[in-house]
Structure formats: C-alpha cells, structure tokens
Length: 299
Image (cartoon, rainbow, N blue to C red; front, side, top):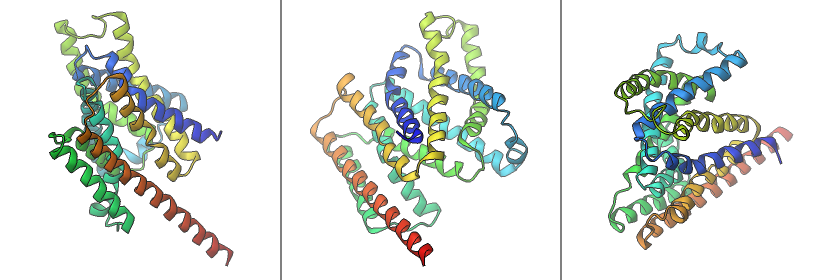
C-alpha cells in the first residue's frame, strides 16, 4: 500500500475513533479536557519542532501583522470547535457531531462561492440542495435544529479558509495556535488546581494519563495527515475524509445507542446522497481536467 494512503487511513481512523477516547474522560468537565488538550498539544508539537530544528518559519511568518492576526483568529476557531465537539460527544450528541463533518466539504464549497467568488457547477448545486433538504428534514421532522452540526462544520470551514491565507504548515500552525490558547488554559487549570477541583493529579492515575494523552491524540493524526497530504492527490484525501465521520456515526448508533428515528435517518440519507453526488462529480471533473492538460502538453 502507498505510504501516503496508509498514513491517511491511520489518521482518519484516529479521528473516527476519538469519541471512544473523549467518552473515557466523561467524568471531567469539557472545559478542563480542552485545557489539557491545548497545553499538551503545544508541548508535544514544540518538542517535535525542536527535534526537527524547524523554527525558521517564525522569522518570516510571525513578524507579519496580518499573519499574527489570522493565527489568533484560527486559534479561537479551532478552540471553540474542539470544545463543542468534546462537549457534544460526552453529552450524547455523537450523531450530530458526525453530521457536522459530513456536511463540512459542502460548507467549504459555499464559502468558496461567497469569499473566493468561485462558481458552482450544476451537480455541485444539486448536491447543496440535497444537503439543505437533509438539514430541513431533521429540523422540522425530527424537531431539533442541528446547531451542533452546523457550528462544527462552519467553524472548521472558516478555520480552513483562514489557514490557507498564511504560509504555515500544519504542525507549526498547530504549535502557534495551541501556544496562544495555552495562556488562558494554564490560568484556568491553575485555578482548578489551587481549589483542588482539577482532575489532573487529583483524580485516579488513569484519568491523569488520559488527560496527558489528549495532546498525543491531537498531534499524532495531524502529523500522519500532513505526511499523507504530501504524498497522495487531494482528491484521494477528500474521499478518505469520510472515514472519520462514518466511524463516529457507527459508534453513536451501535455503541452508544443514540436515537435514530426515521426523520433523522431520512435527513442523513439526503446528506449522504449529496456527498455521493459531490464526490463523484469532483472526481470526474478532476479526471477531465487532467486529461485536457495531458492532451495540451502532448500537442
């Protein structure tokens, strides 16, 4: 198997199985979990960058005011995304969380239209209509607006859009973001520690180890994903992306028994149809473009 594909598969399996990890920390408040996730991610990525002696980007990137402002904004977005996701998993909303990452690629397309003035092709518009119909069915049929799903999708999509405007690789970017977020995180966890309410070091040894590993399960799949992105086409990355929310969906239904009535099922089916249309159309479009470039080069 291609090394890039293998790295992508492992990364998406990690992300898909993350609900199991966060559920193991269900006794810890979400804000405390996210604090440890931020701090240990910053420590781990800092160690990796130090070993690689990969801090040259600081001179060129972080001296720029626009870059600093953008990284500050993406830090807030990813922090809110992580917090919402962990809270959703431990509050019994894994299905809604998985839905957010199912519709994320479609939200990306809409942001491209609004902010980058891209034009949607016919089948892309049809896919968006199916996805909108799915959200509508779940809102009025199931009776609950999927705000968790939309917030996760929108926050992650805006995060990705802004990250494209700065010249920072994934690992240095994560280090900058988690370092910035570590300031309030350290203050919050210090207060909990002084009050004797913090789980780290005060609870069971297993809980302390799990909180430390929150940084590992954040950084490791990102490293694998970065390796994969350099070795395989973006179209392949896009198709493999659906492994993660699919696993989360399966866990929500089979392991944690979240309700899945007909109305919710219909909404998911409409969104899955949208994703199939979107993915197949994108693959065909990329294939035709590649053929045209090859023909032009041959002439």
